[in-house]
Image (cartoon, rainbow, N blue to C red):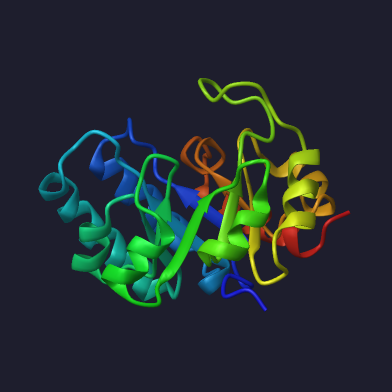
Length: 209
C-alpha cells in the first residue's frame, strides 16, 4: 500500500500570493477537517530559505493541528527545520535519494516523466503528473491518458497525483484514469469557500462517477 494512500487533495501554495493570503487559505482548508486526506505543499521559487522559513513554520503548525500532511517543494533545509512530512522533488531539484539521506524516511514526491517506471528505482511515494488539462504557462495539456500511462508503469505502492487545470468537474475523469489524488492551486485559492471546495474535491475522489 502507498504511504500516501490516504491523500486525496494536495493544495499547492500560490507563489504569487502574499504570505498572509497563503496562511489564510491554508487555515480555511485545514478547517475542512479532512485529516490525512489533505496535504499542503509550500512552493516558493524566488525567496531564500530564511525568508520562506516563517511561513513554513506557520503552515506546519496549521497542518499539524489539522492532522494534514505538509510538504515543502525543493527546499530540503526548510523541510528539516519545520519537521515537514515530506519534500517534493522537481525536475531541477534534489533527488529522492538526496532528500532521504538528509531527512531520513520522509515522504517524497516527484514529477512524473513519460517513463514513470523510474519510480521503482528512486523510491518516490508519489508522482505528480502534469499538466493534465490546460494550465497557463505549463505547456500543452497531456490529458488523462498520461495518468493511465503513469499508473500502468509505476509500482502499486506509488500514488498517482493529477495536477493542472483540475476542478470539481474534472475529478471523475482523473480518478477513472488512475489518480488517487489531485493537486490544485486555483481551485482552492480562487474559491469563495476554500473549505467547502476542498471537501467537495475529496468527496468526489472517494466516490467518482
